[in-house]
Image (cartoon, rainbow, N blue to C red; front, top):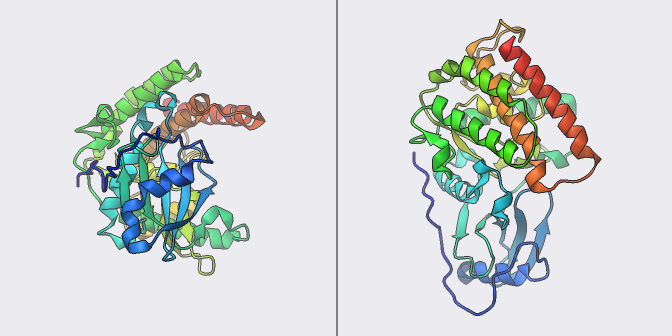
Length: 355
């Protein structure tokens, strides 16, 4: 199923006022009011605009109309020279995935209302989508281990529904240079891009070993013949739960979605994890019909095809997380702490693949 990158709605008013940078908090409310003007006929005037916390990539606001309806307006970064290769234009991916989900209520995604690419009012693209019920999973601090296992299993089941959506090519929808007719070629391009990003930002990675692992095990990727829709970022902040039942009621932030191997999802849901698939998520995944045949041990030389693919995806994810702080300009002691931990995980994973 193709992703349509064209705007849902394009506001076309003209004026002499320069478009507002999303970082200009004083001027953003008025600019967003202009962006969402096409929505006010049915919803009433904008009565409140509130910045939402939690994101480290885009800038997001909640907009409330006089009729009581709330929407979420998400603005892409303006400093495109500080984006990694795979991040270029990815807000269009989010808009397109939400469109696909409009006919699939079981995917629990926001309804896209407007995608403004005119940059007349805000100096970047703006995606406006419906406001979801529920609360972000990570805000529920009283979830017990047993309850978490149940939620994880539900997440595994959700993944199988998401992966039933099929694309036309493999790779990132917003990046033609990171697409290909086969998953092996597309993933190879993705790895090459992050290696080049690391070099561009002066981040040291065990590049030679990463490339060697892909060359040695790339044939395992050939078993993936259908480009499934993969969210890639199903961490707790992107999953909304009913606070009483803990049922999953919403999923957001699909800008990093790609078409590829469903097993990549298991890594995206545990980006700082180790080794194979998270057991409780994997159990729900298999129970809902997902295919996963991990070995009992991840000892080098005793790896199944699924193990190898998951470990390759972990290498890619660790590499992204290692490079990301440099273009983002992250600061603080946690940056170095994370770097050391992630580099150790990457080396350990490469040992498993190359041992």
